[in-house]
Length: 246
Image 1 (cartoon, one colour):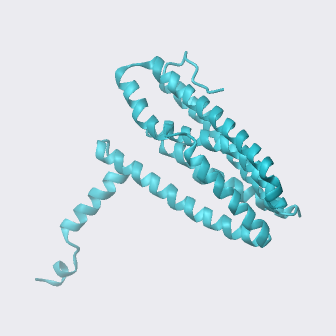
Image 2 (spheres, rainbow, N blue to C red):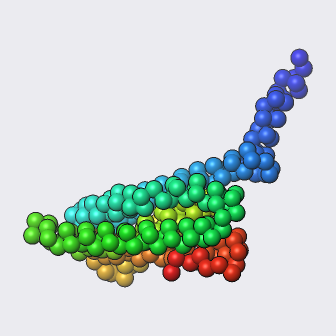
Image 3 (cartoon, rainbow, N blue to C red):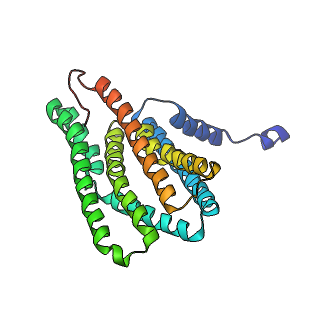
């Protein structure tokens, strides 16, 4: 074996690498599309985790220990309850929408696209109102600095749940970036930006201000996602039909 052949990379390995890159970067087969979508989800999740880690470091430095603990406590409740209050509609959308499209049942499809978001918004708003009542009843036993952040958390739940529903709708059309980026990238960026702005303005960055910034980020990201999603759905389905939940 000569020196050149000894140092040359195996042709089989090069072929496999080219095949893998081709699957992620190009190709129109179902396997290639699946790989690209999986790669997009992976990248968004990794970037989101890094941003979440960064935001927690910044908030811990900008806020006092007590206020940061209250913020994490309330935000954890928002994440926990918000992930459950769509009652599985986000996951069901990825099964129901393709079935309606395959069968050509456009009226049912339009009804689901609008009604699913209306239902999750109304139900989550009702549950949030009940939770606010519970907070009011339990206020004598709740720490005073936790009451207002908990109320703000209740205001955050409806848009959080609607965003989860829109995530499922976008995923059912293979619009992964539209489904994931508003919640995992844009929302995190807004939380960092709004809290940094409050800190730069010299405001006391307590749990209340941080929750207000987080609530605003959730609402802005959800509304922006809704506008883009409705435009795409309007071009994807019959344009004469209204699919806006509002």
